[in-house]
Image 1 (cartoon, rainbow, N blue to C red):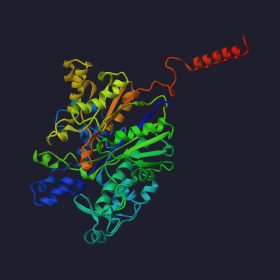
Image 2 (cartoon, rainbow, N blue to C red; image 1 turned 45 degrees about the vertical axis):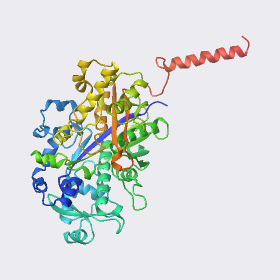
Image 3 (cartoon, rainbow, N blue to C red; image 1 turned 60 degrees about the horizontal axis):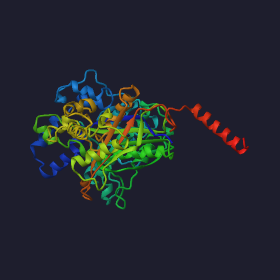
Image 4 (cartoon, rainbow, N blue to C red; image 1 turned 180 degrees about the horizontal axis):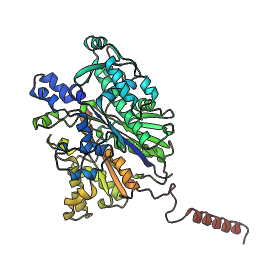
Length: 513
């Protein structure tokens, strides 16, 4: 069979300022260890408005209204600039305000764990009714709401997790079991957020690419959360739960976990399933992580910056059988960091970049765009982590010089010619290669590039199970219009003619002529 193609993508951001304060692990840890800290006192004054978040240049890139390369036209720090006439809706997605997302959280809750007060419910329901992707069935799940006194009872006496909007409690998430720590209110809130943001990404994928949702046969969810109970902590299944929300009635699915590298793993799995003929249409999807909100907040506040990690991220990608149009996924050129690879930068880059290129007889310069860890340097540099994409491009270029693929003088321009500035929010799995997929598809279809490499990396040692590093990569190529793997340079009519002549010769041989 022919290679699978990447047929469409959807990307969403959710502005979540109150969740920064109450759900981000940096802030939760500070409240527990130093509740009277100056950081916690200053934090509310460093939160951005929704309008600022929409106008932030990297966010406009994320939802497809700007190309990544356009960020080079803005002087850093980028948070001091705004995009004129910025729109919450983009070519491939949207930026949703927190209040609407809280309402959507109620719509995707099937166990009546989310409780919202009457006043807030009425207000947010009216907003969601105007949202272009919200169905009547989803709106119908947002009932009239609860009395605030009842919500306060759940929080104060039954260990519910409070939900805030504009620093006021407007609802809560109840615990799902009295004694099971894996179903406590905090974890249920995290998981419902991952489910809702994943579903919103999936809905944007379907709408922005005019896809029949009933054609989806399999879903792979690849975020960094895990849902389960005391007997199976990560049993799953986010994938099927999300498929249910969006109406993918003909789909089944499963969850894939590998820290930041999971989306790249999931894309390879999806491509293999399609190429193998198991399924024709597979969606790879991931929602956001509340734990990562405000992760570098202390450094941002210390430097008198706004909290830039104030958005949840999500994405969804459709992998389908070859249609002769969309970019193909070269499953024969997969980079992989194996158990025996080692963790040195050169070993990692060799295994993920040059090993698959060598297999295909390609040079480093034969790849038009490398999408590596596309972390936003506006966020990481003030926190002391530097410009992560730039560091990756320097390592790739240095290896290219060593291999003789480019001259030493080309190292300085390699990032500009073969890379991009980072624009993705620090949501762990979200930056690792996949933010470029939507932009890549457009670039392929517009004949701007012929080849791209997506690189996902992960830190497995965070789970304390192994000190191993992790990573996989795959190559996208422009579709040559052939939907079957036939001999190159020979037309279908020529193949038929050759078979016909061979059959005539064989028949003549049998007849002794």
